[in-house]
Length: 165
Length: 330
Ligand SMILES: Cc1cc2nc3c(=O)[nH]c(=O)nc-3n(C[C@H](O)[C@H](O)[C@H](O)COP(=O)(O)OP(=O)(O)OC[C@H]3O[C@@H](n4cnc5c(N)ncnc54)[C@H](O)[C@@H]3O)c2cc1C
Ligand code: SF4
Ligand code: FES
Ligand code: FES
Image (cartoon, rainbow over all chains, first blue to last red; front, side):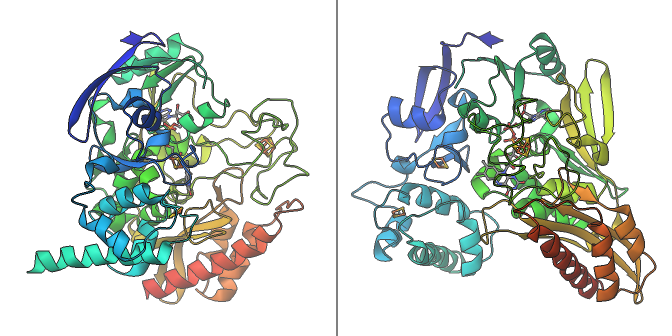
C-alpha cells in the first residue's frame, strides 16, 4: 500500500475531535498541530528532540511532536495543552504552576505541563530527585526548575491524598 | 527534508521485500534518530517503510531458562520498566533510564537503538569532512573537537564513539540479535553486530540493507541479577555519556567467581576486554584487583588531544562500580 508523496490522508483525533487531513508525508505532528490545526499552544523550541517544548500525548504516552511524522499518526489519539484545561477552568496542574511561579516567559510551559501530567502516571518515586529526573526532558531557559518541581509535587501530593482518603 | 513515499508494512516479509525493491528505502520505527537525520539532510530515503504495524514485534518474553527475548519494536520505556528485565538484568533497565528522556524513550524502539548513528559533531555537518557520512572525504574530528570521541577501536579514518547506553549492557550480557531477510532468519552475536571503523567507517553493522531486526535475545545469566550501569556525563541527566560502565559480579566468599564488564563511549563500538575479565576471575575481590583489570582494559588506548581524560575517568569508574557490586553481593 504505497501513497504518492503529495497525497496522504490521515485520520487522527486531537483533544477529542476527529480530523481527516491530507498531508505531505514530510509533515511533523508538531507542524500539523500548529500550522494546519492552529493549535499553537504546543511550541517549537529546537525542532530536534532536545528541548521538550513540543511534548504532547499520543495514545496516552508523552512524546516529542517535532520528531513524530504525522503520517505515522493515522488513527492516533493526540492530546495537547489545549485539551487540558480552559481559561475559565484550569487543570489543577495549571493552577499549581501559577501558584508556584512555575514559569517566566512561558515558552516551555505547555511542554512542561504535558510532561508532568504523564509523569504523574509513570512509576517514578515520590521525592524531588525523582520528579527532576522525570522532568529532565523539558528544558526551561528561564530556569524556573525549582518552582516547576514544587508545582508538580503539590499536585502529586494532593492526588496521593485523594487516593488515600 | 527530501521527498519520500510512505509504505506501511503489514508483515515482516512485506517490510523485507519493500527494502529489497527500493535500495534507498529506510525502515522507520520510533523515528527519533531517522527523522532528525532526515531534517539534517544526512538521511535522504526515497521510501520510508513504516514497521510500527508489525504485530508481535513489541513483545517482551521472559523464558523459563532465564533468558529474555525482547521484540525489536518494544519501546525503550517498556523494556526499562519491565519487571523481569529489572530483576534478571538490572543493568539493562539502568542503562535505558540513563539515556535520553521519557518522551524519547516512549518513542524509541530497541531495534532503532541498536542502529542509532554516532553523535560526532561533524557527522551531520555538511560543511565538515566526515568519512562516515561521505566516504573518502576525511575526518575533521581527528584534529578538531574530539572530546566525545573514542580511544579504543579507532582507525585513521574515524574515531567516533558508539553513543548507545543500552548497547553497552547488551554487549556485557552477550545478547544475540535476530534478523529476518530474504533468505530467512539469522542470529548475530552482539560482539559482531557493530563494526569497527577500519578503512570503511560508513559500514557500521553486520546487517544487510534488506534485513529487519526482529528481536534481541538476552541469554540467561543468573548472577546478572547483581548488575548495574553507571553513566558519567556533563550534566546529571539528558546527556550522552562521557564514559559509562555496565557490569555484573558474582562472588565466592572474598573471591571473584565470575564477572562481566563493558564500557561505553570509550570505544568505536560498545567495548569489552576478555583480558580485564580474566584478570578478575579467581582473584580477591579488592580494589587492587579491580584497578588492575581497569589498567588491562585500557591497554593500547589511543587518546586524541581532547579525550585523554576519558581513560582515567573510566578506570576510576570501573573500580567504583565493582566496589558497589561487591557490597551488593555481600
Ligand atoms: C535528544 C536525544 C537524546 C538522546 N540521548 C540518548 C542517550 O543518552 N543514550 C542513548 O542510548 N540514546 C540516546 N538517544 C538516541 C535514541 O536512543 C535513539 O534515537 C533511538 O533508540 C532510536 O530508536 P528509534 O526506534 O527511534 O529508531 P528510528 O529513528 O526509527 O530508526 C533508526 C535506524 O534504525 C533503523 N531501524 C529501526 N528499526 C529497525 C528494525 N527493526 N530493523 C532494521 N532496521 C531498523 C531505521 O531504518 C533507522 O536507520 C537520544 C536521541 C535524541 C534525539
Ligand atoms: S570521527 Fe568519524 S564521524 Fe566524526 S568526523 Fe571523523 S569520520 Fe566523521
Ligand atoms: S521542539 Fe521538539 S524537543 Fe525541542
Ligand atoms: S518559562 Fe521561559 S523557558 Fe521556561
